[in-house]
Image (cartoon, rainbow, N blue to C red):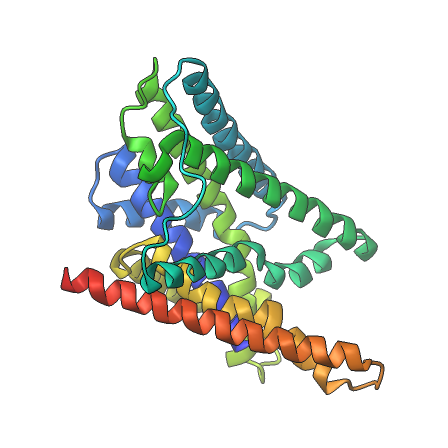
Length: 316
């Protein structure tokens, strides 16, 4: 449960970092502190909403709009001959460059580990059997958005693509109405983040309250003081994290290499090894052990590579 809350919290910080770096500072020309304060005020209006149905639907529509614009820009530049052939394979020059390849794994883990919202979403469904369809649809939609964004983002910006691809939409695209399209991309995605924030924040607040106030007989929804205190405290912590953590890539790497790996690989394998009902076969046990070993080794290398890169960056 603590690992789940850890992942939830840093997911909030990642959203804050995205809003800080790609929305206000570039769209309105404000400093980072004013940026995050402004987006926090916007988020407050939907954090306390009774229903997140419409905000969730609108956030999906805005993410698709962002993707359509990015794909459209790429297609226009391909037709006009403004995109060269991107490099398809990594450049391996020494041992350090080999270790750098492992830093991608935690980012992928972070992208696909969203389990902590499944239970709360299932509780909101009138027919709980619909959760399977919800999960399948979500995975299909998210996978499509991730793949298309990464493909067309890399195709459009090549080796110049930044850790936060939205930051690339602050340059001259070399096409008519480029500035307007840049603003549209940042604005649509920033609005998407504002609307996604409370969906994840709901699970974070509920889990933390259950851990800290487990002995309380009053549910969180009827205790206004506890509800307000937990909400304000986490918004302030997320605000500080979004302002003082250097960039979103750092959060993706370290949460993916720790919390996400535990949730997706180590904990399920540990449950299989425990085999409470004596239904696991020998093959299941071997696969569970291999799963834990591979997860620990690969992400130990990833954490080492991340820390090594950060230390070298500070020295430089």
